[in-house]
Image (cartoon, rainbow, N blue to C red; front, side):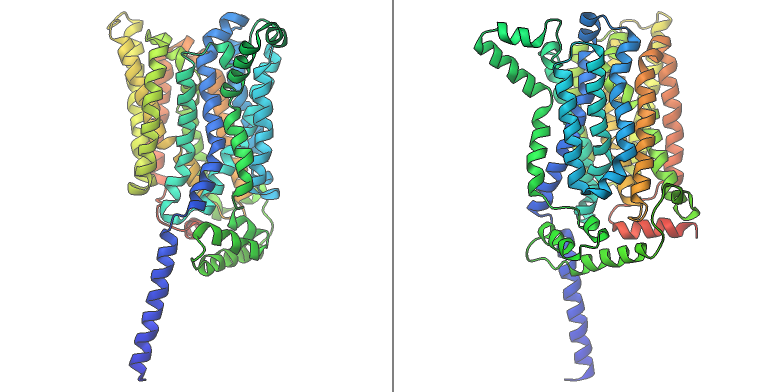
Length: 498
């Protein structure tokens, strides 16, 4: 055999191995699909809780005699709990694993729903809402990180965006059933003692009440996730970080398929972890080193933009905005329920076709436009102009804003957060970024009702200004991460300032 023939055989072998690796990287297995579904059950719980506060507002205020401040405290208690969940999210996810963190979060989620279900006063209401928020604070970090670490790079964005899709599904479900189910059955709060009511009811009626309590307290997705977590693998990258090489390869093999060659991906993870282990252990102050500055600015900046745009307040209290604009809340919530899920599905499709950066720009531009539309609508009404058109304008503005949010800004910051931080600082970085998100979410959620009462037009002008600034920030700072490995993204950002 001549040297040229040897060279051709070698090149053919390398090409065959490259094609095989490309096929492995492009494969979407049942294990990846099922693991992603199990993870986003926690996102569905978040959506249910977010939609609940909007649909229950009128009933709770009227029946329990709550003031605007008291109900704002109840509604924002979830985001306040999310702040505390965020503080522990990164460390817990690193200590007990991604799966363990989801189990741990569901303990608080189930306890929170049960507290709300049987609450007789505002103390139990707020405590249940806080407990649910603590769980959601853990979920908001661990779910996108877990999905990003198990999925192939060419579909990573779409799969992580399923986090936002399931939030929209949960929110839409409560927007729909909140129109037909009395808030006492939905929120499971009544003036009468729940136990006395159950004992005095007929057996059939008692069973019906318990079914309502189970279905509409959000327990089904909680229980579903608790059970199915037993059947999914731990993150291979986390196992690699823990030094459990065999389990890392076994997890990759399950996720990529029995006949897939995972040696290259496993070696890349091993080499990356070995490189990180050579340096000092991650501390929160390490994030402020110059080499991590781009990642930190992008991560925190996107989270602040997501919340300060007014998305949390509008989602939590959309019923009060419809009432302020004179549009029927029941009809408006039904329209939102119908629109939000297809828009989120569209985001799942576009995130890998358009890329993160263009979709973020389009989403923020839409939020900017509809914030300005709402500001002008309420401004005209304050001067007695176009009164008959204000309800229609309000509906268009609210639906347009939340649809624009769902298609990009709702999920993309969490996708990018899960991609841009190296494993050696992912714990402290994830904690800081998630804490920033929930801190500003609490501020917006608590202040939103007061701002709407103060000046609805001025409120949406503020949100318009923030969205406009966000467009400039995204254009100047946010890189495109589509189709790149996590290691490549993190290395490029770390080396950017060196």
